[in-house]
Structures are given as C-alpha cells and as structure tokens.
Amino acid sequence: MEFAARAARNEEIFRSINERIEAGAEQHGVETALPFHCECGRASCLDTIEIPPSAYERVVRERYRFVLIPGHDDAAIERVVERQPSYIVVEKVGEAREQIDRDHPQQRHHG
Image 1 (cartoon, rainbow, N blue to C red):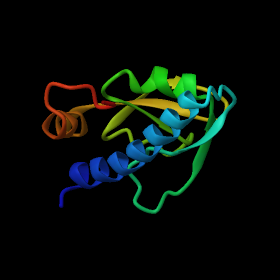
Image 2 (cartoon, helix red, strand yellow):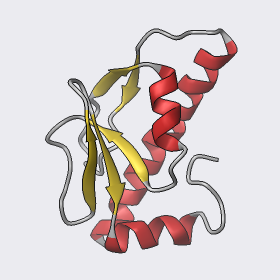
Image 3 (cartoon, helix red, strand yellow):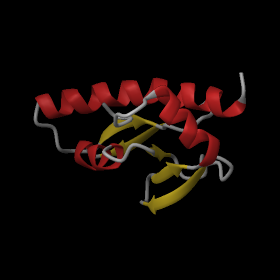
Image 4 (cartoon, helix red, strand yellow):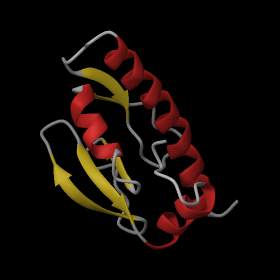
C-alpha cells in the first residue's frame, strides 16, 4: 500500500474515534477539553490531544483539516494552518488530499 493511502487509513481510524468522542460530548453538553486522538498518519501514534469539543468541531468542518500533536506533521502531505499550545491543525495537500477525495467523494470528510 502506498504511503498516502496508508496514512489516510490511519487518519480515518482516529477521525472515526474522535467523532464518537465529539458526539458524546455534544450529547452530554461537555464543553471542557477532552482527550482526542492525534490524527497524524503514523501507524505507531497513540497520543492524545486535550482540546475542547467545540474547537475540534470547528477544525473538522473543513474537509481536509486534521488535529495533530505538534511535530507530528509531514510537509510531504500537509501544511500547518493553525498552531495552538497543545495541538496544531493541518490541511492535507497533494496526493493525501486526492486520497480523501477518492475515499469520500462529494461529502465532508467529517460526515
């Protein structure tokens, strides 16, 4: 499996978990920071990021954006678009962006 596809699959797994965390937080009215999984493409990464559910929702409204631990970004597939003390927001570029389009045609990545 090529790098972009493998990274996209890893990111997809953690995005799915994070969406369940976000949905539970919304259902229960939680506004304090919760541990969301880093959405980097590293298969070995199991790190979490403390982020308020509302901030996570704001990021994932954008189809190509993901939350990562600072330093987990890869310039070959993404560019940093926001820096916070405990996390960064990246936007996929090039082949990684095309992989999202192939996996999720005509829909938000998030939904």
